[in-house]
Amino acid sequence: MIKLLTKFFVKDSENTKDAQVRAAYGNMSGIVGIFLNLCLFAVKLLAGIVSASISVIADAFNNLSDAGSSVVTYLGFKLARRPADREHPFGHGRYEYVTGLGISVVILLVGVELLKSSVSKIFTPEEQTSITLLSIIILAVSVIVKLWMFFFNKIISKKINSSALKATAVDSLSDCVATSIVLIGLLVSKFSGFNIDGWLGALVAVFILFAGVSTFRESLSPLLGNPPDAEFVNEIKNTVMQSKMVVGIHDLIVHDYGPGRCIISLHAEVPCNVDILKAHDEIDLVEKELERRYNCLATIHMDPIASDDEYTLGLKQSVSEAVKKIDDELTIHDFRIVKGDTHTNVIFDLVVPYDCQKSEDEIKTLAKQNIQKIDQKLMPVIYVERSFVE
Image (cartoon, rainbow, N blue to C red; front, side, top):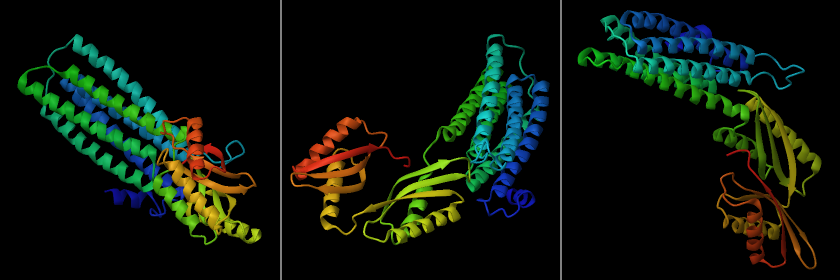
């Protein structure tokens, strides 16, 4: 079924880096979600009214909110395709994240209202719900449909790396669990005579709220700025290191302006004794290769280093081992030395992980002590920084 829908909605479906193809996948997910959720809402509402079940009605309105979310998803992907303009020179790709944020707010509002209705029924119970075979069949079919929607959105989200569709998939799975709870509760009420409808409605509302919070966090994170995927970082590093002139890289930053829209900046280390024009030309070629492969803007700062000085290389290794005694995750780069008659300045950048418990001043003090154990004449000049990638 997924292949059939993809063939109908998406042209050139394998070219997922193309913005048009990505938008087509998003539109397909939105249209399918709107249609199926509206169908589920209609039949569940009918079943809930017939059986006078607040939990079934709650589940029906959950599907209605899902239909609204699918509308927002559809519009979000459509707006994200808009080209860059004077006010938004980096494009409108972050509309997809804003879309997820809007979906989560709707889900949370529905969850709060349904929780209030369910709690009210717990304290002021009504007559026993009337369980019909039709209600049971409708709920059972709904579980199957929602399970299919989970796999549908999960597959698409992986294919185009979409946080919005990933959140939609999680929402579908939570709906599947919620409907299963309602179905089990109706069967328990039918065969035991206990009216637990209000409690089940509250449980469904909790699942809705959980999905809302999860979606909110999933959508807010890229807007605030989260680290790029580790696999993508490794791909960038491998691409840059394919150049025979580049001997190392650091200070890699990936600026995310929406899926398929990013700016990559990094420092590339090159031997200090090579022709500067040749080095500059090589760095230009590396930038173009990054842009070709990842559909991005790339900026590379060139750092000259002493790559053939045995003393400098050996001292760099000793300093690296010295700082790792403080924390095994500490790394150094931009290492250089300035020799004098009475002392030697050892200048480098020290990268400290965010989860390190020591303060920057404490790390600097310990690093200087460890380095001077190598040689008392060494005078460390340390610049502490944080990594923007994992």
